[in-house]
Length: 111
Image (cartoon, rainbow, N blue to C red):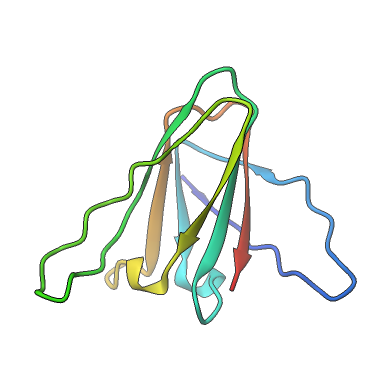
């Protein structure tokens, strides 16, 4: 399991090639901005990356939210909005899992 590190943009720009994902990664609430974070997954693998992004929030009626289960097609990238509401209050984390990890990288931006 890896703790994803955020990239903090600046006015003059920040270069980032991204960093490798693990089969199970976490995003700490402390790595997020006041509005959460943007998570970009870049899939350079020959297979799709079937992911799961945890969500500890609840609906207006109090029902538990369901985890997001997106897929990133091979050779493409996707950006996901991660809300502070998704953080598990017991751990302070959002968990992201991946079906493939070779040549799959991420960029995490606090917002």
